[in-house]
Image (cartoon, rainbow, N blue to C red):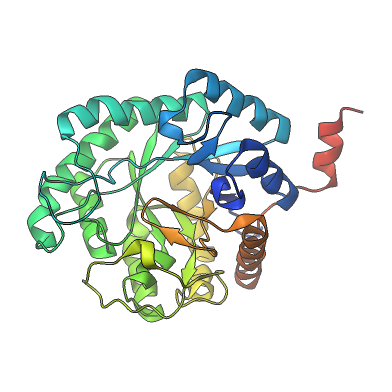
Length: 335
């Protein structure tokens, strides 16, 4: 029997000091990566979110991808990272009327995914007003996420909901319920153990969160965290988080999670293959030099440390992965 396998990917902007294309792609190529999630990039006109790149900048990105032999695994969009309600709550998060949001932002993300020939869009479940009762907003968030999933499906794409602090979908219980109620094949969940630890979850509780997400799981983000100071249910100051660490030394318990994942991978791979996805992605987003509400930073050295840690965790669970090897160099050199 062959080993269960995953596809390694990561947020390339985290590996680049100035987020230029050459910095991002040279770091990933040197580390042996084949896939990346695109989020922030400087394609020659300053750092921009992928959603705001011009047509000319997109062509530059694609040319550089070909030069460095890289493919896009997912669009690291900020879809759903806006306020659910037009309420002043002391946060810096913007509000966008959903009627215009669904007509402009979501189709734009779909256009980008098809441009880069990838099948996945990373997104979120909206921010309920700070200090309000989360349960009072689940129905509205569920309705809106369902509409997003339908538009993604119309474009042949899949929308992934990431678990993260302060959002309606800030825990597995809510996300699993949203996934069950929406009941759409174009909606999957994105597990992120590090995000859960920042909210005060213990290793044992993170494992239970992972198990609750398995029926809707699509792929995993890999980061970890030590010594959270937040109590579950409290608002998290994401820009003040300082203790992100590689996946083999944090409080998420990735080794135990991956032992279970190894047995679950055949089912998960079949689930994602049915959506046209080439495999199960582990998307490295380490934040080891700092993180915030809309992204993080690791540098080329930190990203390498985090990648090697992830590989060690995969090795310990008997999960196979592929980095570039000499055969890839032979194929690329043309002689």
